[in-house]
Structures are given as C-alpha cells and as structure tokens.
Image 1 (cartoon, rainbow, N blue to C red):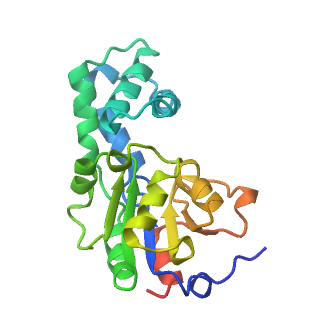
Image 2 (cartoon, rainbow, N blue to C red):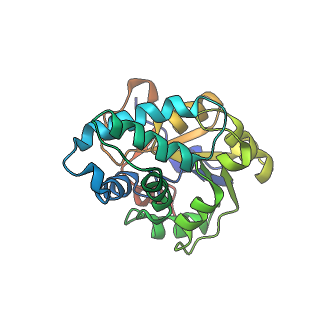
Length: 229
C-alpha cells in the first residue's frame, strides 16, 4: 500500500516531536567512540558488548526510575563483565557523561532549522535534562518543549512523555507528528496512542509489515522535503 501524501495528511499538524538519540544525535557513532576510549575494553567483542548492553538496559529501565546516566554506565559495566572485563565506577560515569558530546547527524541542524520555520518543535528523550541541553546546544533551532525522563520519572515506551508533550504544548494528538528512529521506544507506542508517526530509518533496517502505511525516511532532510519545508 502506498502511504498517503505526508504534507496533505499532516495539514492540521502544528508541532513535531522528536526523539533525540538515533534521530538527531548519532547514537551509533557516539557510543562506539565512547566505548573505544575505555582501555579496559580494548580487544573485546564490541558487537556483543553493544547487544548485551542494550539487553541489560531494558531490564534496568523496567525497574523504578533512576537517572539514565546511571543506567547507561551500569549496563555498560555489566556487559563488559560478561566478557571478563572490569570497568571502574569512574569509567562508567565518564562514559555516561560523554553522551552530551556525541555528534549530531550531518543533516540534523539544517533540517531542524527548516522544520522549525513552520512547526513548533519538541524533544521527548529518555535522558536527563542537562544531557539533552548539552546535546542540542549547537543547534540554531528553538525547541518549544523538552520532555525528559528526569521530568516525568518514566521511560519511553511508557506514555508519560507523550502525555506531557500534549499537556505542555496544549495540543491534541491529531495536531502532533512524532518523528523517531526507534520503533520500540517511540514509533510503536506513539502509533498505539493515536499519534501520526514518521520513522527515520537511518540504519536502513527492513520495514516491518505492520508499519504500513507509516511514513519512512532515511533522514531528516528527506522529511523536511516531504513536508514542504
């Protein structure tokens, strides 16, 4: 099935909400670079480490709220231990603190500027507020709202981020378009809540059949073009 024209379908949309890491900030380059700077991890199986860290993170996030920096550092330390590597608490903290310096995708700044000229923009992120502020400091784009896990004491895919965005922006879900790279944290829960969604498929992953007729773009630049920005 051919997806409907995005600009026409979103004629009533007043605001775009985004996930940050993996959508605007290059999560893959950032985390790989940060892990590569830890001496204790030299020569480890990096792909296994990344996979196991993500699995461990999901379990940690399912428990009571903790700052994401703690979760990120601890999940990395636990994944390293599964390969017999010992990462100190200080190294875990430094690793987590590096997140605010991870690079943006090359298209992010210009695309956000174009989109921001027409829509109100909001960020919905699972990190702490200070980390998110650091990540977006270089963008010449005003964000109407920043909703973080620190604010709502909850992690996506749970609903508090989305509910807080609607409340703060004083909009209904049919006036929003949610843009994200993560199917698990963003696209599926937002779609289930009745939001229009756009999947930014930067990794070129296979498109799940149950996303049809969701909109899929390889980057934010193509999204801006599709919206006439």
